[in-house]
Picture (cartoon, rainbow, N blue to C red):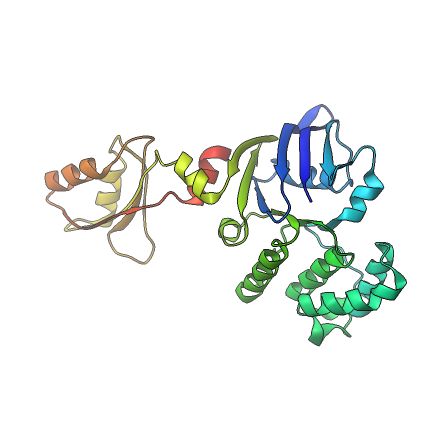
Length: 308
């Protein structure tokens, strides 16, 4: 089911939180929605879910407008907000039954859907516990289960792995990836490796405007002008070498790589390769280059360039 955002604007006291943005998300696609704090991510997601009304523009979910058909839109969407509000004094099973009733699941299907979500979200061992007794990871699973209890065609997930440990993060990523094969998923996160591990496409928003849209590979190819090189330089002090590297005109950024002596990561200035200049610098100072490894453009660098 498609989600189509059309010229969307939201103002608060004259300030534009989002400014005329537009994009489309197709069925079977997991979209990573990125941006710094205050960029407009959560505002956009709340409008898509009909939680907020836009100042201008519209969103269509499966052909239904959030302005004209908000009740129908809500039926099509499962939403996990960032703060994951739950009733802590309810058991997992009771809460999921309650969520199913709220979402209008047929009475004869409620038990079936609850069992399915308990299994899919890995809650079998916790289903009789009070939600207040669960760890953060299991509470996130309960939040995902309630978002999917009515079998929605679209999932909106705001920071779904926030506060989880590494094992829990891997499990939730796998779950989202599997869900995304059949449904439309919009995933907001600050964890950039999570986007590459989970999402088919990335959309970056900054100051209320879309500044990038494409697969990780497409975004890298668009930003290949800034080469990244890892280099090991010996016969000089690390501080002296780093200071000298930063003076090279073709070097935008140079920093030591933690835990490795005299090992540095260097990012080139736009459309310039620093390798020849690094070699000349080492010859001039009688330093020896023992490694020089070109590296692909990182998603972190792309994000930084587009949102500063």
